[in-house]
Image 1 (cartoon, rainbow, N blue to C red):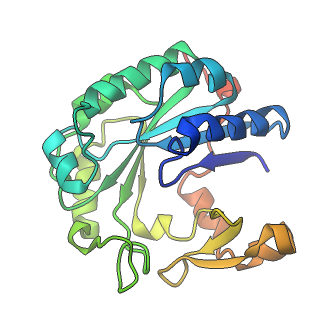
Image 2: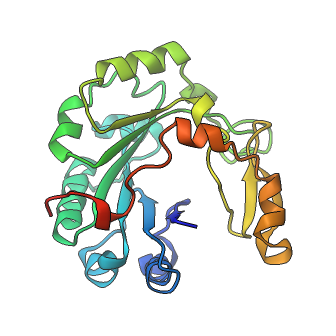
Length: 245
């Protein structure tokens, strides 16, 4: 194992980030993993957290689907009184100050597919800008048992391609279509079960706590070839990054 990424939900919700901070510290100090990262919406991250845990974190990926607050509200990412763009700039500054690589994740959907993000992304200058095509997962964001309905967010492959073309000059852009994304991640849920997305929904394996990794991973649906094809292996340890802090 070389890399672990904590995502949610929102990882900073539990104990206001203390819990994920301790996990990050454990993974770096005890497990000595080359890469430890977090995906967050950034709303609960504080400088105090960076002071305490920043040295153990390689990459902070902040979710940003739009640089327009109106669009963020439509998508469901509105942050109330907080200005998302200003918050991104603040987080970018803390990442620089505490030697953490800064990354941005954007899900392209029907509400932001026409947006021109070139100027904002280049100003923030992340090490990596992951651009995902909105993906439907049965039971999660589509179907009768869904936690939320995402059908209205879906875009065509052609529209996704047009968005990529408009941002082709952003050197840090890493695109992920539905095809690339679906089976190319090893996902563990809160019960330590691998989630298999092959059939369009997240089907859990048995927990690695009960049957071990070698058994459970056989039911993960992981497509290793697609993992490499989508650029899943990259320079992911800050010790190896040539960054000017």
